[in-house]
Structures are given as C-alpha cells and as structure tokens.
Image (cartoon, rainbow, N blue to C red; front, side):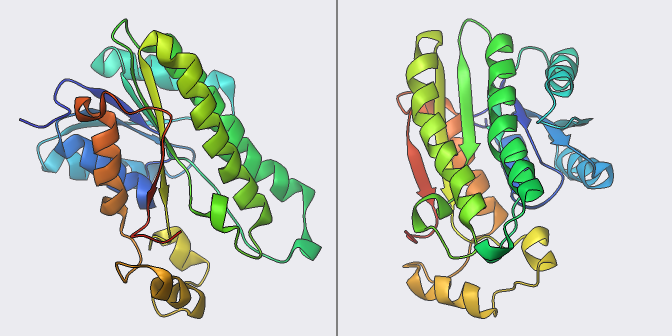
Length: 250
C-alpha cells in the first residue's frame, strides 16, 4: 500500500519537467493526481497516460495559476473527479537568466505572476477546499533563493519570496491542520533547461556539479520522492520547513 493512498493531489505546472516527476511519484504512492497545465495540453495528457498505464489515477486540467477564476475552476474540476483535495504542489514556475542591464519590466511581471502570485492564489483556493482533516501544501522553491546566481536576479527574488511565504503560511494555516513546506531543488535536467541550451556538459552546470557533494545534477524523480514524503502522513509533524533537495549544493 502506498503512503499516499486515499490522498487527492493537485500538481500545478505538471505537463513537463519537475512537475512530471512529482505527479508520477505521487501517483506511484497511491494518490489520485490532477495534472495541471497552462498551455501544454499534449504534455499533460502524456503525463496522465503514463500514470494510468502504471496503474495510477490522474486527469489533466488546464488553468493559469495567475488567474483567480481559472484556479477556482482547477479545484472545482478536482473535486468533481476525485473528491476533496488534501495535497497541493505549487510547482508551476517560469524563469529566464541574463544581465541585469537587460532588465525588462515585462519579464519581472511574468516571473512574479506565476512564481509568487500564482502560488498564493492556488494556496488560498486549496485552503478553501481542504477538509476538516487539513492537508499539505508543498511549494517548489530553488537553491537560487540563497545562492543568488549572477543573471538570475528576478528569479532569485521570486524564490526568496517562496521561502518567506512558506514559513509565514505554515504559521497562519497550522490552526486548520494545513502543513506548508518548500522543497528547493538545485539544478535539474529538464526540457526547459535543455531548451535554453544547457546540458550536463555545459560550463555553468559542470561548475555546480563540482560544488555538489553527491556529484551530479538532479533528475525530476529526485524531487518527486521528496515531495511524496512531505505530502504523506510520515511528515505529519513537519511544517514551515524549507528543505534543499539539491544533492548537498548550497
């Protein structure tokens, strides 16, 4: 029996990358999983199909996390399909890197709308739908919040906000039996990382590997396993924690 049997989990931004690894890990532990996507329906449907082929339960629901009405629809569809949700993984995120001299106001709004505002909207809606037994919110942060890499000023700022929000909401929502934690990955090889020209051999990633005690970059299922723990009753006494899931990179 999986440690998440009977749980209903919403994973935002689960059509690709880390989100896929998280959705599969939760489903493998017995959760019914809602695979959220903003635009990549094909990727979300593929994730659902892979979960179902492995014997799990999943549906795909399109919704932009930065739009309150769409977030409300996401949870309405979750309840119709699987009943009361009790796990939210705020994985949806966007990023770009470049010199601060090329700072763009539109990019500032883009990253904060998804990485911070969307996380807050989704958590607010989840808290309305969680039952009297409460639930678990897991935010996906980043070691960038403390490593502050050059060229990542906006992204680092959004992830520093996620750290702070995690601790604050854990205090506020604890009375409702809702736990709030953050899993903060280091570099993870995903489609998005490859799309911007990075690979394990890239100079920047190679330098991170040299600083990582476990000697490699991460894979999506590395993050998924940690999230499955935080979502489970095994972590029932864990809240307000920012946990680096980075192979020791810090």
